[in-house]
Length: 109
DNA sequence: ACGATGACTCTTC
DNA sequence: GGAAGAGCCATCG
Image (cartoon, rainbow, N blue to C red; front, side):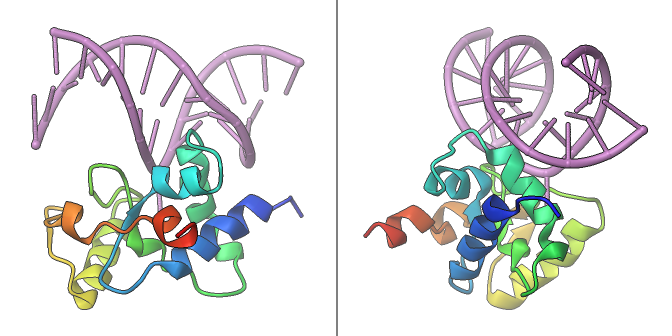
């Protein structure tokens, strides 16, 4: 067993993301106090399988609003986001800037 | 311990 | 907005 404290933090933030909204890896990393841990956040997503509770990792995208990740998996995530009302084009969020949700803004508010 | 890799982000062209 | 290069840290062989 590894120390997944950081991962749990990421998963927790992901669950705090309201429906129909998305956030970026950097935003989560920043809230955790590690603005440069964007890659680790992605790692945490890959480790989401370790989470005892389901994690809406599909609500997490990169700074460009593109559904980064494993090929095929992104396609599945796109469907989930569309179900929430998020418009996606070519694996990219249309109104990304509009539906973007900053966790730190809500947490520290 | 080292090198390579990765679901990233930033700056610059 | 897209492409290229550099920086970032943890995990894996």
